[in-house]
Length: 311
Image 1 (tube, rainbow, N blue to C red):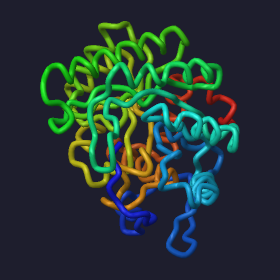
Image 2 (tube, one colour):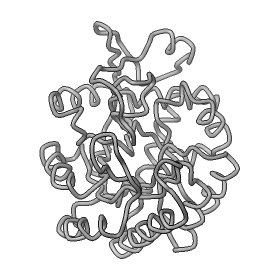
Image 3 (cartoon, helix red, strand yellow):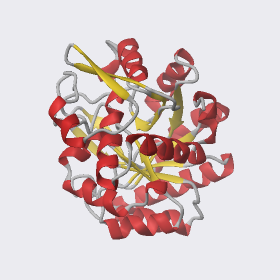
């Protein structure tokens, strides 16, 4: 996740809703400039990848959580980027039990200072391992982990190999703990999928996948899932991806506070419905079917969230 935006709130435009021709529940009502969804005869959405511990939410976390519930969210998977935020994520999961579920892991890109980042190293992972071990019984996944071969983060093969080593070790941790991986793969879709397969990973979510559909289908063959953020409405690549992916391999995410429907505007979990509605339009199915299938997919991949889902 990258966040380079002021702390403004993002709302779903009525024009978008009309263009999506929403069919069936959840239904929405406009309150001010915010659309509130009422879930009818369904269990609701699962945001499989968000950064709810981000500093952008420190001032109004209660309001953000409540608005996400009103929008139909029944569970948020809170992913980590570095060891420094692990305790905060666990605290949020205890503050909002049965709604926020923790995922701990080391992201392939680490902050050095404001505006300066580098690829991850085994030293970053060494700092994280004792905390992961401490909280292992509470985790629903190991994440956010993965590879990021964006040129500004890797200056050569050594940097790539460092990231691979960090991911391999976290894959082995996930297998030992019988947990899925919540995976980042920016500019590294094919190598990420290949590495996961080579190391026997059977349970993985590839979030906001930015590769070609043909590469994603290699992941589908391996049994992996792909989560789609609200930025799909402004991403031709994500739109092409959804057309090719089977609905049975799709989950929902927001990556909040990033990857919202509007650039440089804070994204929130309540925008999960934007992802669902666009998928319904592309697939030519009802919104209810998208909700049902993506939630069942999330349950298969993250069985520990079952307590949040009501039939």
